[in-house]
Amino acid sequence: MNPIPFLLSRIADHCAARGIRESTFGRYAVNDGKFVARLRAGGSLTLKTLERVEAALTAGTDRPGTNRPAS
Image 1 (tube, rainbow, N blue to C red):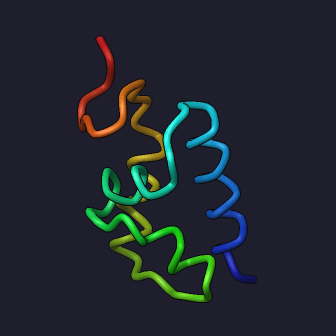
Image 2 (image 1 turned 180 degrees about the vertical axis):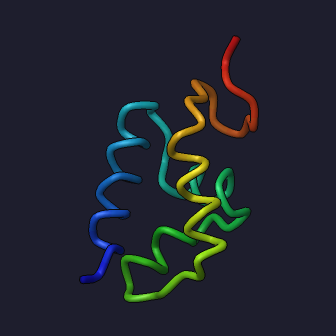
């Protein structure tokens, strides 16, 4: 089973809900503005990168570019 399509769907939903671009999410999550585009083009990711993406998806931040939850 390939988890990348599901991950891309979650990222797209996350970005839509917060009104940010996927490139902004990539910069925030893994310091790579082209991260999502590379995944869509067939790229792969390491377990460590997946963990960083998961952390960004579950962080609950309301503002892009912040590492801390909104208070």
